[in-house]
Length: 443
Image (cartoon, rainbow, N blue to C red; front, side, top):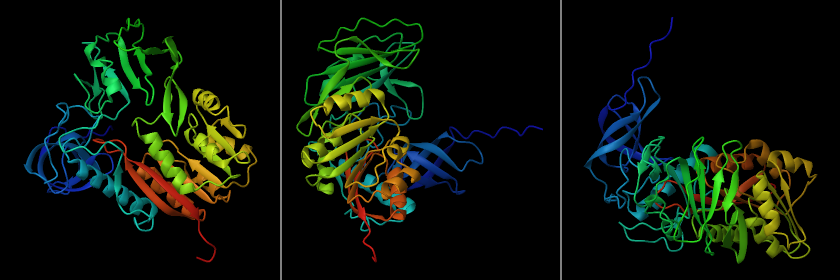
């Protein structure tokens, strides 16, 4: 006998008192019956009407939007973006919060994740609780910094208009302008064109150069449109058969500037989206590691070689750097970017597979910048066995960072310092740099 399907609660409304912020761009509330709600478009301490957007009877929690604010927080402002709000664009989480409040909320999330997943207080992590804005991002409430140098637009199948996805949805919110898009992206005018037949359009404006790139992903059987933009731009396409990104017109890469060097980044390759992010992170990592001439260093998940190059610059002719990266195109770019360093080697493959094969048993310094899921227990255990004097962990997800910090503690390392940067204003994302060192014997 089949069980009856559970009743959907979508559309049901509750009047609730809003509790603390939670990881993911929402706050926690409870109904009078004790049901947990993850509520977007609200702030801690508010009283709101929350409308359920996901969930069914018996669910552990429901997702909801605040559709009416009955008692507003002093940190609330009117969202500057006309596309922000319940049921609208899902790109930003905190358009309705003052800039200082956004950073405070992000700090509370990092604090909670450290406590819950690593058993660490901010003091034990060497962090004063401050979330630092990027240079140039201190703007008055009601203004939005234009920081996003890479924007992926979805295309509405019926109208051919470019827009952004609604929260946790495949539906497209057509827009005339994205307020957080960098000037170099906005000047391409992606929103003004007809993109019929395309599934997505990604616009890239490199930092420190005039390179612009548009990556088109056609729907099955569609032909690429003739791209005529006001600015010189490279055009790429995503192949249906292999998912690869191939050149149509112009360079198959953009040139990004950071740490005094130019980096080639291939089409579809990873680079930090905030124009100040790469320099900010390199500075934090190098200040934490304090490299010495002649050191042996690892750069894991090294991408196109940002940290490997920064290390090589500082280690001198007797130092050496090994970078490991899984992406084939990123490895090609890293080898190109670092070709003038005789003692830098880049290996392709997953860190957990390649590192054991190198035969390396001892290093002085380690940098790791893993994907959002983190490095994981096995990789952290291996790294802990190498005896590094210091380890720099760059993290885009505080939950993954906290889990891995717990694993490093098991391996005999403690957090010396933690720095947290708001490199993604208006969103819930943060970037963290943790510096670890071995626990002194007997301590």
